[in-house]
Length: 151
Image 1 (cartoon, rainbow, N blue to C red):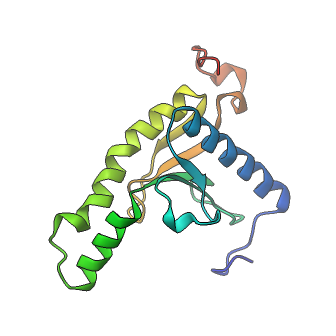
Image 2 (tube, rainbow, N blue to C red; image 1 turned 135 degrees about the vertical axis):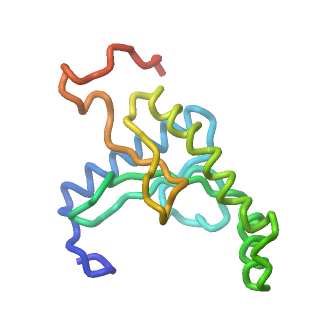
């Protein structure tokens, strides 16, 4: 069971998901973006693309997703503004707005690396990118006809 009471995916399934997440991190790093897996050491002090792996057995959508994290000082400024009751300052909106702007760039980078990615349609994480697999995971008849650039 997961921490929220849902059935946890098997170790084999989690391993495949983590492998896909590692491919996402590498594709983003190859593009020059800072990226890391959720839960890595010293994560709170890092900014860039955060790759999440869903450990639940049943997922309503993709089991891997990517979100953008602004500089920790910007996130802290938003938290401080909210804590003081000032929810209308630009500092509160900034992390979300930047995340939404980065969403399109992340999708285009992942697609160019042969990773199937799309917009998140969940109101809880509207700035996240959903990752479903790689082009190689598709049956040959469904694969795009373009060839991703060599690395």
